[in-house]
Amino acid sequence: MTLGIVSFWGALRRALGSWGNNAGLAWCRVVLLGLAVSVTMPASAAASDIGRLVEHLRIADTVEIMREEGRAYGRDIAREMFPDADPDAWEAVVARIYDGEKMRDLIVDRLDEALATTDLEPLLVFFGSETGRKVVARELAARRALLAPGAEAAALDTYDEMRASGAPLLVQIDRIIDDSDLVELNVMGALNANLMFYRGLADGGAYDLAEADMIADVWSQAPSLRRDTEQWLHAFLLTAYRPLAPARLEPYVTLYRTPEGRALNRAMFLALDEMYDEISYLTGRAVARYLRSRKL
Image (cartoon, rainbow, N blue to C red; front, side, top):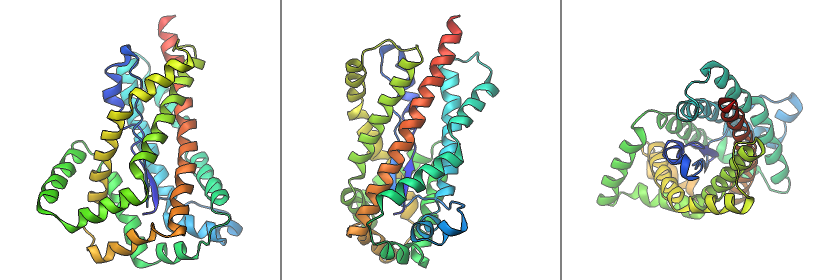
């Protein structure tokens, strides 16, 4: 799996419905092995191992999907919290927060740092192979597909049907989730991003809670966020890998049991956690400005 990120704003609609009860925003953001991006890099960097890995992982494409998700859910925020605001002005704010070049640079820099002592050759061999390219392409296609209304629910229905029949693919999906601890790492990253959103609201003067209260509220979201994350992972991985024969997917599953695969998984989580913490904080600050302007 190359590493990617899954719907950072996924639980937004549900959380916004109970905003008045300090429910907060559960930014169900899921990091996955596999979704990366093809970043345009200087010639010297492109020739390096990390540059080649970033190209194989296709991180620019993933960043564009993240930006598309951010703009869509930014519109949801506006409808729920300040429907009378100028939509074009708010979309411009969201677009500035989701600065694609800045997002790409942060991911590449953190990968370079985190993988400095890792032998990248096994990763380069796999992701440069036909199977590696196919897996990355399928993950990107699945992520785009799940942006469509009703797509996740339909995928979950299919997952339940296949689970009842004991489909071998679901065994591989379970191994992918368990080996890389995808549920817990995504839940912890999302909870941290939620806390940063609260801090942005507080620093912007729109949210009057002590730090301890913010932390308690964020932790109260963990059970529902874990459930949402598990569902999203099942929907995403099934959508991505169902067209692949189990024998073709198996080398990918095995890769993330190797030291190099585990290092890549950790590095991507570190990079994406930092990126989304910053995005979440900036979004909270921006929402606070709009909420305060409504009171004037």
